[in-house]
Length: 473
View (tube, rainbow, N blue to C red):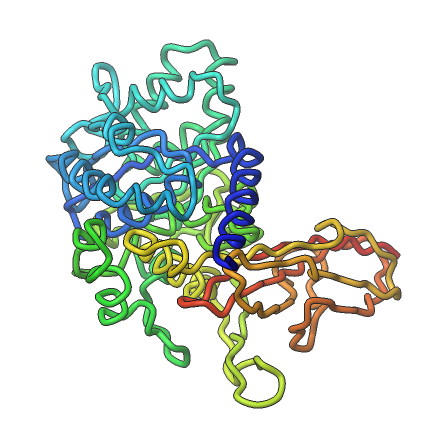
């Protein structure tokens, strides 16, 4: 009886949530050099598990520096076919998963040539024309281009828009684009950024992966537990015993899921704010500036040139992990802190890996035997204005878990985000209510506070609320 009641509550809440969010899903077209490295296939498996929360508009097979003369759309189709075999079970857990036939119709090809060889008059492809088609649809939501390989298919779409559209219309269409590129994997990226200075573009520029944020997804970091990116964890939680989709997830060759950060920021989790890369989230944190040219201009085979305008690129966080405390307060701050640009991504790694593992469980398990994310609920707005020197009360007592699991709460400041750089929360705050004495300020400031709510199911799942605190003198 309890299970039946929980199911009714969950599906009512899920239905209301999906209706409210349907028109707010982030649209995305993926450009992938699949088969250049197994990690594209790995990332595609994960993406399809979120296809009810991310509005996939295209999956385009492209080239890259690692795969210059061929594209592999059949490899995309193979993964979609495996997804189709588990879709019915996924629908037991959340609604909105598209059928495999619909996804197959979104598979397109770019040209089988490298970089700017595929850009110019007469260089249109099925993929570049598809980007334009989706842009021209009567949908004002931004269109994200998630670039896992080379960018020449996007470059050709931009070239054609620029050459065939009136200036005002071209700018209108291009202003709807949002690009997140996994480094530069051909010579088209710099050309795009130079020719279209108002295009929203996230990238760690050049081919030097040592200078990029995204490798933090698989980086082994001394001083923390790296189990969730181990081959043992992958085998047990993703590959084996998780149905047809898990069985197509390949072993790691060079690095685990290097392309996944290009869409992690699009997952609606209460933390991610894709229009604000400087706010930080599962895909990392990026700030808008013109980066200096690296001393190593040709690493990875990509000749890097000086940027001609500002782009969204590497930012630095200082982070002290929170760890389990066997006695007393349930969690404590670790003894070690980290400060660099990759921290902005791996600080969330345990959370998004557990989320992935839970969705892999959805491929095979019933609703009753699987875990589902908690629902944080604030009793107040997530943007508050308060005078300095006053007390601030934060309350998440309305939070709940669809499975009836016990919940843990963790509140912390994100001082790198906002104008006020000192943390408003200095101690470990774990109750569902928090009271803070706001410091005195001489001018108006903003500060971000993150609430993380985690259940005690298996695997443990987390969701967030981001609060923007406006401090006034």
